[in-house]
Image (cartoon, rainbow over all chains, first blue to last red; front, side):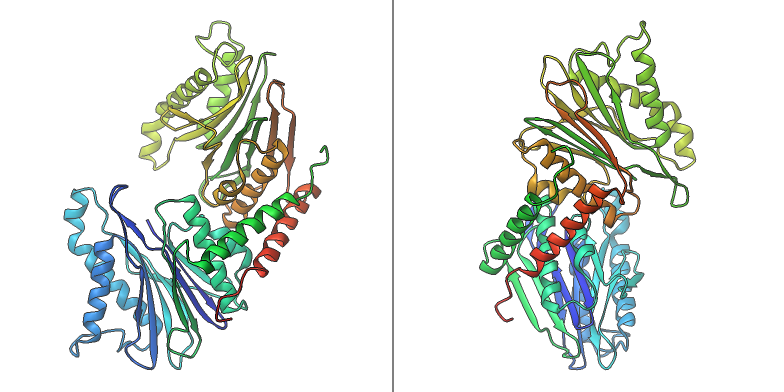
Length: 243
Length: 243
């Protein structure tokens, strides 16, 4: 399984992903699920991937190939709007899944994959899209400023409590790290390293990109302070009337 | 959907459930999912139910009927061990599902239901069991002292952070209420009133049974203090090195 999330703020974007993949429970590996495409100075794209690893790797390979192919009908370099880029990636994803769908399904495997595409094409605003396995997509909005793919339920409550569009990039990044932490504590199919990318609107380059293991001092300290803080708030909660 | 949970502690049991049921999104109603059976002084049973409402109501009706039927082959009054009670309820549940399975499945409905059965038969210890739709069951253990049915993921992180067998009944009850709160904030298919039952080991009667709406002063205050406390801990988290 996988857990990736993206947050669209007034100040820019925060994207985060875990790195655990597995075939069944006995072939557990580490693969980055965060792919950055920044070949033209007027645009930046970050793609987060979940689902069948062969599908997601094939999609990323085709996106790279199209960028450098002057004859490609469409590429991340030639699309004019973020939603066109989402259409384009969704179409590639659907094609790749279809290619192996019949034989995979006969063998009991699922070729499906889903993606979050975030970025900016100047001079238009930044944004994030979630691409379903069928190739269609939705974008975030001020009322729902975050998107998730993969094992999304464990880490949703903290997002619902904290995230709003006016939050600072760093606060949203901390919230994303906590959302991943809650998920990793409750589900072993989601695991480190945790990748985090912060994009400040209008800059067209990643502002920060970091990778944290559980022992990386900053992430270890964040997780510990949060855990201790929660337990301390818990101990101070009001007593029942009969206590 | 539904969210019910039970916690087995050294001191006794805590059981909690939401009360929202729905057929699709447009027939939303309120039904208690907590059923207490205490007809003999040497035993107490609490049953939490999730899944198809017709199935869970039929199961509860049959359990009641068997208690008062001297010819019943088995009942909650005649079983000798908690695991026998779990076998018995699991068997009834499976029979009820089978009765309507074919016609329901043809109409696109799912007859499945799952249950948590908690209680005590003196002089044996107290315990909790989770009954799958197929009628088999698992029990909690000191390493995994809680069980959940229904929409269980949103409310799991707080349990994983706090619950251990030595916790007081009231602390575990507060944790169960927070677990339900996190779930209700993130998923509208789980809703109030929240029912809570506290059972002190060896007493063979419910110690406390309460029902909270979101506006009930104690629950409102608990939710608000937890929400404020989390936000306050969040604001105090360590800054990134570049901030």
